[in-house]
Length: 241
Image 1 (cartoon, rainbow, N blue to C red):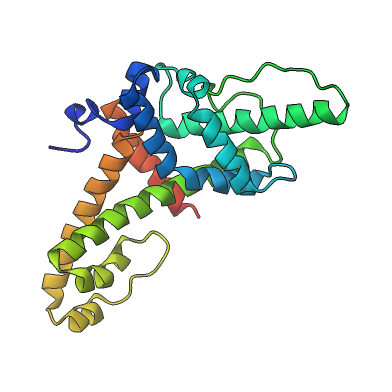
Image 2: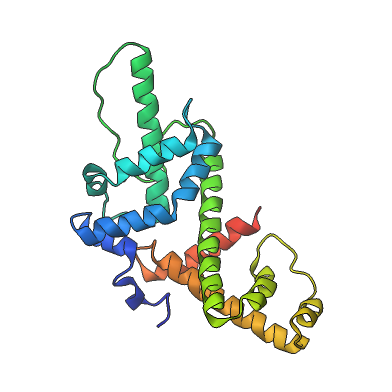
């Protein structure tokens, strides 16, 4: 089955969350899996934008604990789009709520406040330490790198199962956005194959890599028609650095 096809979205993690609005164990588990997979981009965003006197990882743990609580998961709105956008909007609001609380406590006004809705989109007016565009770009790049790392991890597992770990270690350079892969002739010589065979192997590896990226991206989208757009966007994010 084509990972980008419509049928692939019947049981994906984010669509399970959106369909149930958090009101099922399946949806709660799916959101937990997504949060675990994309913990890194949230930490990167907090490191870049700042989170007061607290450590970014401590704030990230606090944020995810809140998000996965009953109240947090019930805030998931089925009309929202990409999980990437939802998560970024949620962490911005978490940081804004923390700052509002800290400001009130500093003034001695220990009064309750209404928490901001974590399901809001990323265009909300939330005060953070750097311009929103800078923080958003940092988050999106970390997100794209997390997707790549997850796809590479699957490829490594497949190579280990197939007994082709040495070949994968040699060929994975041709999957990188930010490094020159070197000479294919030299790589072929190291593997003891001709250059034509190496080109075929690289082509197959790239095709499988793309399939895995599409499948992973699909898990974070509500609509199959968005996969190609998301692929292009994330490639642009990686290529712009």
